[in-house]
Amino acid sequence: MITQPGFGHILNIADARRAAARRLPRGLFEYIDRGSEDEIAIGTNRRQLDAIRLAPRVLVDVSRPSTEAEILGHGLPLPLAVAPTAVAGLIWHDGEIALGKAAARTGVPFCVSTQSITAIERIAAESGARLWFQLYVWKNRQRMLALLDRAWAAGAETLMLTVDTPVGPNREYNTRNGFGIPLKASWRAGVDVALRPRWAIRVMLRALATGGVPTYAHYPEEFRTKLGQAALSDDVALAADVTWEDVKLLRRHWRGKLVLKGILRVDDALAAASHGCDAIVVSNHGARNLDCAAGPTEVLPAIADAAGERVEILADSGVRRGVDIARFLALGARGVLVGRAPLFGLAIGGADGAERILDILAAELRTAMGFLGTPRLADLPVTLRRPNQ
Ligand SMILES: Cc1cc2nc3c(=O)[nH]c(=O)nc-3n(C[C@H](O)[C@H](O)[C@H](O)COP(=O)(O)O)c2cc1C
Image 1: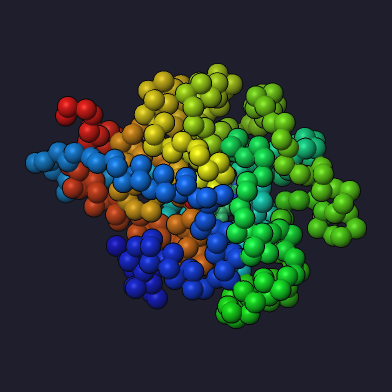
Image 2: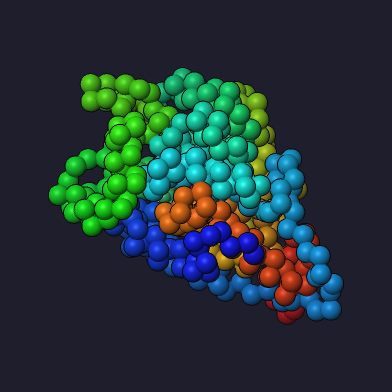
């Protein structure tokens, strides 16, 4: 493993998470780290991943392991993509560009969120990453299609429609912490920021000095000014009436690959295939939305069995170690997305910190493959323990 200078003490994702908690204002750290309501789903995801034990094959030559994967028609050095995460630009100055740079150096795609702080044009120009674009459907579909045209023109090759967020999640800690976008001044948030002066100077003051109060860059200009906010905010509010009709509209409109993110049912996976989607992400949004949602590992095998021939299957939620990637692949995913893990790296060291995280995951995956006797990713499913094996 190459150790980026200054990160020798970060040996795993848990180390990075603890360091991020020390760096970021509490409201921001909790926004990244926590779940929703009683945070049952976070524990469910972890427990279900931990319960997947793989049976190693022995006496296999693992001297030349390859983590190469093919995802959405492209050969990648790792079965990984950086997940779309709103407001990465609050974690580090120009955080989305930094995440994109880390992804580019590692050779994996970076999925830009609709709700990113930096616009896709700048991320494309400055990061050099292979870009995907994540979409939340806006009430005003014309404005949404115009945004997609921007993403396409900027070079996004894959559109990822998030389908698991039809309503706003209930995250009470955000309310208690006074955290939200647009950022608002509150006594509690002020104390949080005052306790993290390094973040305040490096991120907030730089943002204020260069572009003003950070907000969603893809939202129309008028939305960001007080005057236009009331009139426009309804237009760009997340639509609660998103249906398969929208998938049809997007399939007609979007020329690149189309992916649905947040599928947990076999019937929905099959419907995605019949609507011409190229891939799905089996995901419960990192346990951030529905607190009683099924864990992705619970439903992945049935989805892979039923739909794996017709649509490419990716997965996410809970990857903290290389063995977690191996587990998802053993269950039938072709690749995984990582959300929080690179954000913890971003918080401690920008692009270098996020790259360190991707390197750790890659090294851990290679170790897991060596122990499992699976020099190729395609061998991983044979290590899955079936009953009576
Ligand atoms: C801070 C944060 C913001 C997120 N924002 C988005 C988003 O804007 N769009 C989206 O589809 N998913 C979003 N997600 C979910 C991730 O794309 C991904 O599904 C999830 O983080 C995977 O779980 P993991 O964090 O355990 O890797 C976000 C996740 C986090 C942690």
